[in-house]
Amino acid sequence: MTDDTTTSFFDQVGGHDTFQRLIEAFYRGVAEDEVLRPMYPEEDLGPAADRLRLFLEQYWGGPSTYGETRGHPRLRMRHIPFHVNPDARDRWLSHMRTAMDEVQLSPLHDATMWDYFTRAAHAMVNTFEQTPTTNIGPSAGSREAGSLGGLVPKD
Ligand code: HEM
Image (tube, rainbow, N blue to C red; front, side):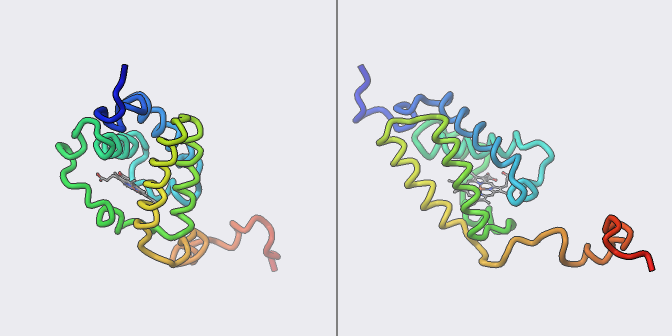
């Protein structure tokens, strides 16, 4: 029998398999998100998924592989290069909520993890400026009138 006072949260929720399923479900959402997807530098989301999973496994008492490969998390600092405004935060949280619903932890474990995610995500916000879009800014000038698909009269 498992004694919940001595096992880690990581073990209690099912260990590596549970975190793997959580992160897979989360990145399925990110892959479809028009605001979040462009933030991820790599073509393949796999390496980013591994970093988040290893971090969470370590945070919840599993293996310390994240620290051995990435060093101190310093998460807020690592997010500075990205445009994390309240919209991005809410999208991140919404994909995580969907992923957590899929994984179905016990109510207590779910509440504990969700509380952590909401607090961490709020702490990651580093700008209140709107998400830049590809339709405004310097790149807009390079678009040819013809690309507006016939909406602009020819003469
Ligand atoms: C609030 C919205 C958030 C956004 C938009 C966001 C976005 C990003 C992006 C674009 C990256 C770079 C991807 C990569 O190459 O690893 C990243 C990395 C990472 N994020 Fe977030 N993130 C958010 C919140 C969080 C939260 C709440 C956590 C933790 C609970 C977290 C943990 C991480 C970790 C561990 C990394 C990898 C750090 C490293 O070792 O380089 N993020 N995030």
